[in-house]
Image 1 (cartoon, rainbow, N blue to C red):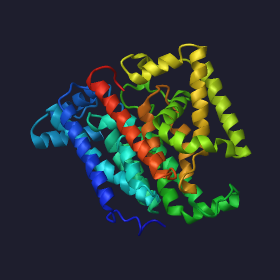
Image 2: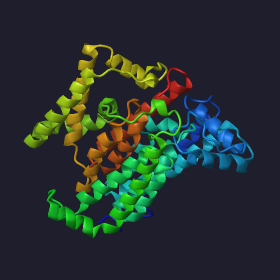
Image 3: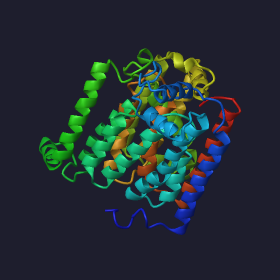
Length: 414
């Protein structure tokens, strides 16, 4: 549908200059940040990289993922003949320079009218921006996931499954994207307006090859999780799988805050026009989340570390019933705004069930778990006016640079 008119190489001058400016901004920021001290979990990743560079492939006890990312950075370090922190950090910055046009291509493939604005919004997504410059696995993981989604949107389902499967060996939580692909394929089919068994059988029959590949990959990943005793490789006791509402609630809080110009410019005025079915679903989910919020407490030890800005917010919101009440108001409003937001195509609504699938298993409330969801949301959300999209660009740049400045000044960690 979008293949010819959205060719990656069919760019306007504005799009070319916009992408170049974004990359130059990232490069300039890297030059400012490159020699700053080790940041938070960067200590563990830097230690693991140096371990590999010294010839040992043992996984450090605080590394929760496979060491695919660390092997890549260590290979670059050996090639450069140095384990200098700034040189190793450049790997992440280089990957981010690849991520920017890759997401632009995804937005074009998804049929976005303002694909440049979406690419810049992604580039300055506040929870993501600072990881362009520090030793974290997120950027490599996102790059593979974005290309998997490009193939999925363009109808190359098996290639998408292969890349989603590969991304599992960067961050194990990426198992969710194979589930996302199943939901996407079901929603994409014209044979499936409803969940009738006969229609479902036809959809599976017509997509037998990708379904077989996806289910095989899921089986391999689940087997690893079972044999490993959990998703995390290291620090397993602090990453136990369960059923928790904290990350879903925090995602909704972030959704409200991070997309505030969009909500003001596009969403607030259409709440009253939503359907009665949507109202019923909102009430069911909203009451459930608020009830769980008031019944829960902030228990994970990593959420007690006060240097993290997210933890300061969480400690405040969980402090007493009055604070929880105001938190719940924001969450309910955000849920309402999310449910009325139109996406570009029916198949893209596979993103909505992916949100709880991705966030419910972890007790640790961590904004990084929401980043891939926001990335897909930016790619799939229906375009609004150019004025709203540009306002989102300016807002994202201001918030991202402010957060990074605070990190460099040691006012907070993010």
